[in-house]
Image (cartoon, rainbow, N blue to C red; front, side):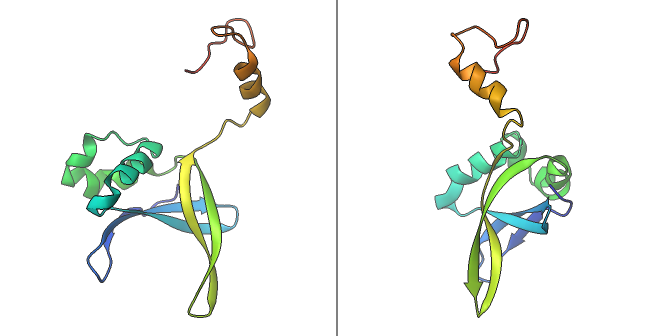
Length: 126
C-alpha cells in the first residue's frame, strides 16, 4: 500500500477511509465506506489490512497512526472499468489478503492428510 491513506467525508456527509494503493499501472485507491449499514463489511476490510479492531475505537489512532500502520502492506485487489461524465477510469472494487505466491505448495497442503505437511518439519497454516 502507498502512503497517504486517510479519512474523508463526501459532500453528502458520508464518511469513508481512503486506502491508497500502488500497482504496476500506477497509484489508485479504495474507499472503505463507514455508514452504519456497512459496519460489518468495513470491519472485514480493516481485518484484511491487518488492523486490530480495538485500535479502531480510538480517534487518535485513526487520525494519526492507522495510515502509517497499513503503509507498505501487500494486498490483492480487483478492478473494473467505469465511465463517468464521458470519462473512462478503472475503479478498485474489492481488496483482499495477498494470495500465497507458491500455489503448488498450497494445493499440495490441501491434498495432504490432516496434520500431514507437504515437507517434513513444515507446519500447516490453519
